[in-house]
Amino acid sequence: MPYRAECEGWTVVDSHTDRAISGSSLLRPGVQELIADGLKRRFDVTLTESLDRLSRDKEDIAGLYKRMHFAGVSISRSRKAK
Image (cartoon, rainbow, N blue to C red; front, side, top):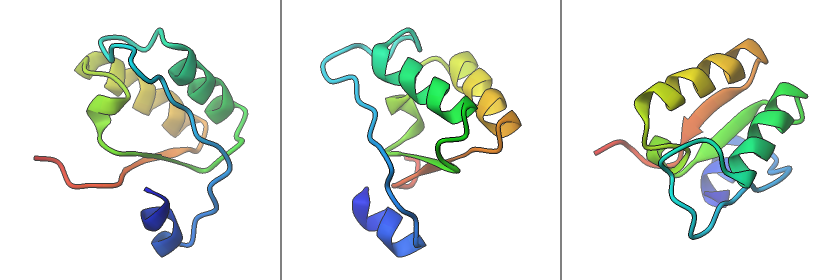
C-alpha cells in the first residue's frame, strides 16, 4: 500500500491495524481509532487493501463510508475488487 500512496502523491500519516482479530464487526481497537481519527480530520484518505479488511459486514461498510464521507475523508482500495 505504501507504493499506491506514493504513486498518488499521498503522505502516509498513520497506520491502523487489527492483526489476528476477526473483521466481522467494526468493534475493533484499530478500526475504532481509524474512525476517531477520520472524524477529527487527521487525514483526507483512508487507504485499505480491500473493503473487507475494514469489515465483512456490508452494512458496517456503508455506515463507515457515510461517516467518513461526512467528515470529508474518502476511502480508497489499494487493489481492485474480485
